[in-house]
Image (cartoon, rainbow, N blue to C red):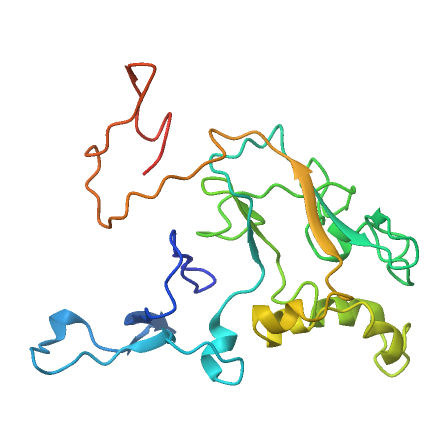
Amino acid sequence: LNNRLGFIGLNQSLNNDEVLAVAYQYTYRGVTYQVGEFSTDGVTPPDALMLRLLKATITDPRIPLWDLMMKNVYSLGAFQVNRDDFRLDVVYNNPSTGVDINYIPRAPLDQEPLVQSLGLDRLDPNNAPNPDGWFDFIDQAATIGGTIQSQNGRVFFPVLEPFGSYLDQQLIGPDPNNPVQPPQVRETIVYQALYDSTKTAARNQPELNRFKLRGSYRSASSDVISLNAVNIPQGSVVVTAGGVRLVENQDYTV
């Protein structure tokens, strides 16, 4: 849970037939507000709790719930990612040459790497606001904000639609009334279907599916083993390697 930015991250994906709903309280200018009902509010069966729905069983871009789903988080398929050995770049497959490059070959983005254009490089090694061409490894993105959650290997873009509306704005430039690139050029680069369509529909536009995350990392392991259980008590899982018992939260996490 990220209290500052107000989003929830799940460690395990929900099935299509599962829903997610929440009740919560927040304080604004000294006044506490509540959304939904808690089980401690006196609601008893057969009455149902009133909750705020976040995910339904219907996947439809036309319903309001679609915009509640974050589409700027990418899993590396690893956990306990080491900062010192981490390298990440964003590349674009140039349709003119078929070669992967780390920038968009159109002004005003042709003079800077994509990792900078898309907001993943804003700081230098001293955390001063000076892009240096390298990914900014700012941990704890899921809880306090940043660019990566090293514990589960997830990269967070600091914008909602990095390859869609945000990239479109970058190609327009600072003056919307005098865009650097005209619409007919931007629509050949911007992958907006990635955000306002289903995955199947987006894949039907392979001419726009040209972006990749590329890099290297070292982690505790590249595999995540599902226990198919929830609310697991701390210390109840035992992991051994070569007959030696491993230490929870040091050698592995649950």
